[in-house]
Image 1 (cartoon, rainbow, N blue to C red):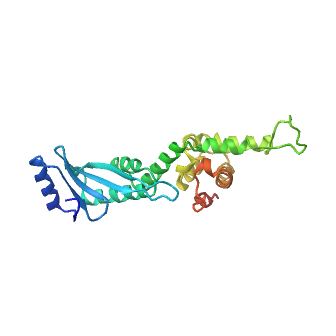
Image 2 (cartoon, one colour):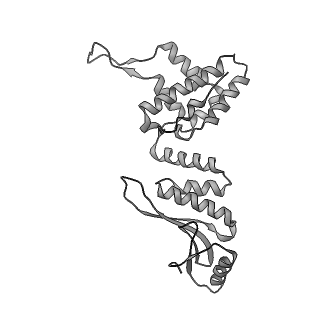
Image 3 (spheres, helix red, strand yellow):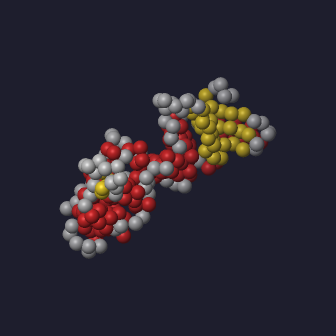
Length: 243
C-alpha cells in the first residue's frame, strides 16, 4: 500500500480503521502533502511524517516522526502540521519543536519561535542578557602592546552603567533578557518599550531602551553572529522606534 498514494478522505480513514479492527498492519502514503502517511500498527491508526534532510554541507538522512492518533486531528490540522514538520526536517530544523507547539495550540509565530529556541538551546547560543553584557564589557588591546598590560574596556564606565541600567536591568526587561537572542521578535521589544513608557520613568527612558537595544543587536549580528544565531537578511530590530 505504501507504493500507492492516497487522498486524505473519510473513506480512507474508515478503511484504515477496518484494517485495525482485524489486527492488520499496513501503511497508506498520502498524496498531499508528500511525506505524510497513515500507519495501522499495534491496534492504532496514526499519522506519521517522513522526509530527508537537504542541508548543504551536511550528510543527508531520513527523519521520521509520529504526529498523533488519527482521531486527534481534522484533515486541515494534520495537513498543516505535516507540512510544517516536513519543511523543518528538510531544512535541518527541529521537527519536535514544531509538533509539540502545534499540539499545544500554538500558531505560526509560536512555531517559528519554538524552532529558534530549540536551535539556540542546542547550539548554546547567547541570551539577550548575555549579549548585552558582552557588548558592555568589550575590551581592546593597549596601544603600547605591553605583554603584561590588562586589556582596556572599550566603553567608558558611564556608558557601561547606562547600558546596564537603561537596558539590561530595566525591571520591564526582566523576562525578555532571559530568552535567547535568536528567538526574539520585534513585538517583544515593543512590548517592553511600551511598559517602560507607561512606568513614569521619564520621557527618555523608553527612547533609551529602544536605541540601546538596536545598538546591541546590530553588534550581535555583525560581530558575534555565531553566538547569537541572527540572520543578516532579517534585521527586524531596525523597525523598533520611539516617539
